[in-house]
Structures are given as C-alpha cells and as structure tokens.
Length: 145
Image (cartoon, rainbow, N blue to C red):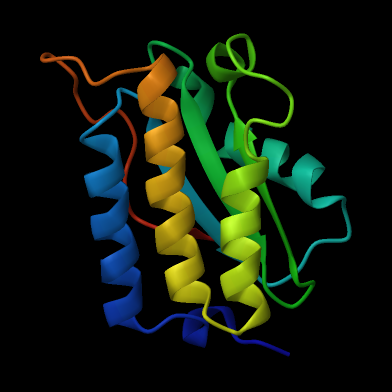
C-alpha cells in the first residue's frame, strides 16, 4: 500500500508547487493538487467533495481547478469550478488527463502532475487570461488527506 508521505519526495513536491506557480502566471485561474491514499467513491465525486473542503469555490471568477489523486486506488480526476464549466465543453480536461495518464502508467507521477498542471494552465489561459491586478487566491502547496 503506498504511503502518502512517501509518494513524492520533498524535492518532487517543490517542483510541482513551482509548476503551479508557473502555470498560474498565464491565467487568473487557480490550480491545486490534492493527494490521498484511497477513495471508495468515484474519483470525480471525491474530487468535487475535496474541492469544497478546500474552499476552492471562493475564487472571484469561480475558476479554480483541482487535480485529485487517490494513490492506492490508482485513480485521479480533474475538477473545475462553475466559472470554468460555464465556458468550456464537457471534454475540456480530457487532453490534460491523457497527458497525465501516459506518465502515471510509467510510474512517473511527478512529471505527470507537472505536465498536467502546465497543460491546465494553458487551457485556462484561453478563457481566464492573466490580469495585471491578479492575486494568488489559493495556496499552491499540495494538500494531503
């Protein structure tokens, strides 16, 4: 059973946090990563639950994105807030998930997360471009459950 604390090294976690900062430079959207051991729920349902636990719906433009991983369950999901959902097609996150899954299948979780974060930032930029007065509304740190 994977140990949540050992899933990523501190150095890998820092690289992921830096990727979030880099992705958010191009968009007013907010990206977070949450990692937990397992879930008995459908991953998207658990992602929505965690999204609200982290109070991610409190961004001004309702443009938060959560990348959720349940490591022992080998499941993940990407959840966007209603501001994003109102502007994009239902399959908006599919290319991001495909990029991540290719890395995850090879056991390269850090790079899967980084590439997914950067791709999410690119996609968000189209609908939520960075504003000069933009502030970082949500922590870039990885949350764990």
